[in-house]
Length: 171
Image 1 (cartoon, rainbow, N blue to C red):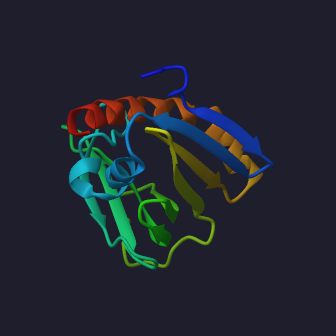
Image 2 (spheres, rainbow, N blue to C red):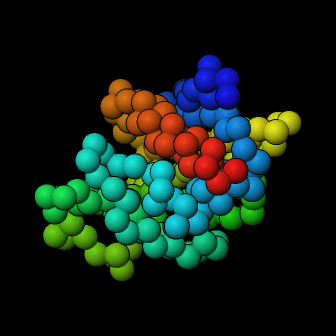
């Protein structure tokens, strides 16, 4: 593995979009599966420090919903939910993303926030490697700035190190 090439590259596109790119030393079908199969996602998709992906529910089809909840051993929970907008196995995955701010008032049947983040991931084969291009379109320049300044790329990089370990075991 060439660690330099496997770093998360972040590219700002205008006021509301950020593109993250990352190489994986595995076939795209396997990288796609690790982003879409709950039994694999639970093994690498880490949350905030000390939290694990406790709930991973999804209906992987256009219009299907998903819910990912993280929990720690003290009972703290956080998560995201949304709707799949495009699913082309094994090349494209697009969805909305809403953050759950308060678990006590979270209603999975409530209408989706019109200001939800839009995400799309494309998986491209390059030799024996896969390039994942992850576009995030935020609702406003302020939200985009906050996400960039909060260290989103660092958090992704940490998760992807876990994914590298998993790919090494199952690939």
